[in-house]
Amino acid sequence: MGKPGPEDHERKYPIQDQMDPEQRKIILDHSKNGELACAVAFQIVENRNIPADEIGRYANQMKIRLVKCQLGLFGYQPEKKIVKKIPKVDASLQKAINDKSMDNRLSCIQVWQIASELGVPKLSVGNACETLSIKIHSCQLGAF
Image (cartoon, rainbow, N blue to C red; front, side):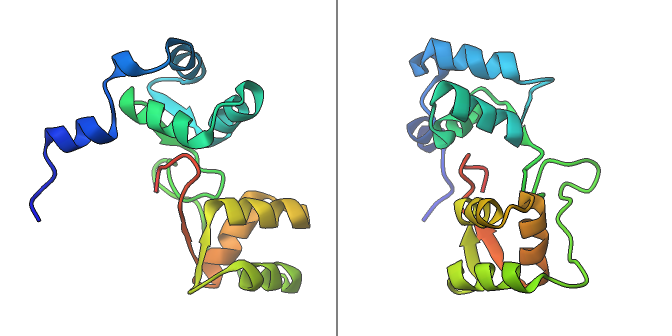
């Protein structure tokens, strides 16, 4: 199995000319200095009914960096991530995480669901996962 070449990238990320011009404009209008914050991307998802993975794919094609992950996992300066271990995880939060996790893993959308169900910030769930050694995977925007 060799190193992926340019044709692999083109297959995964079609050229910008094939992008919906309106969606391209929306992303450009909402990005700042070549970056699109996670929260802003999800405002687009909510307000324009564009799937999250499509926003992420378009941003990637346009070479716009996704930043400020709401779970604290990427896109912060200077440390890259702000998620951190906390001294104690609330019992109800720990139960929710344990109930949904499989093989010490939770998807991004599951973390969002837990935050919504418990009425806590997404970053708080991210911090709890960090403390409990639960790996978060499958970013809804496709960043990881």
